[in-house]
Structures are given as C-alpha cells and as structure tokens.
Image (cartoon, rainbow, N blue to C red; front, side, top):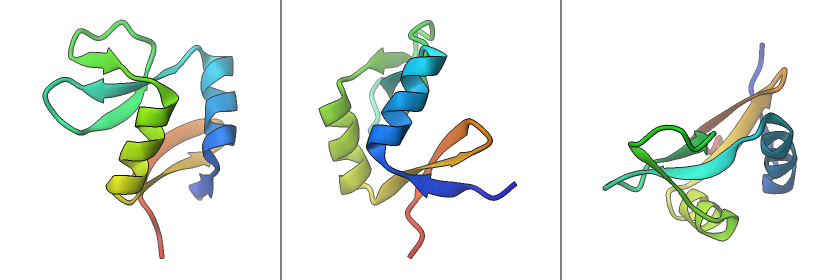
Length: 74
C-alpha cells in the first residue's frame, strides 16, 4: 500500500470517525493521534497539532484508513 499525503481536514474527519484526538508525547515535540488512554501522551488542540506539523515539516499520510505522521515528501 502506498501512503498518500492528506489534508488536515481529511485527517480530522478520519480521526473523528475512529475516536482519535491529536496528542503530544509529554516532554517532547513529538505528535501523534491518540484515544487519550496513554499516560505518556497529552491531548492537544487541532491548532497546536497543525502548528507543530508545519514547524517540523511533517504531514499526515493515509492508506486504507491508516494514518501516519511523516516528513513531507518534496
């Protein structure tokens, strides 16, 4: 399967359907999607998530309903 970049709006749509929220690994600038049950992650708002994606040159990629945050392809 090929991972394709998707818009943040699309990522938010998929996340909502799967019960996922934007999260940050405590004490780092690492971000990921979470259901909010992991004590090592803190839930952040979508604006902060988007800002971190931009600052770190990351994008959300998707394939078959699976999402992954990776460095932007050129």
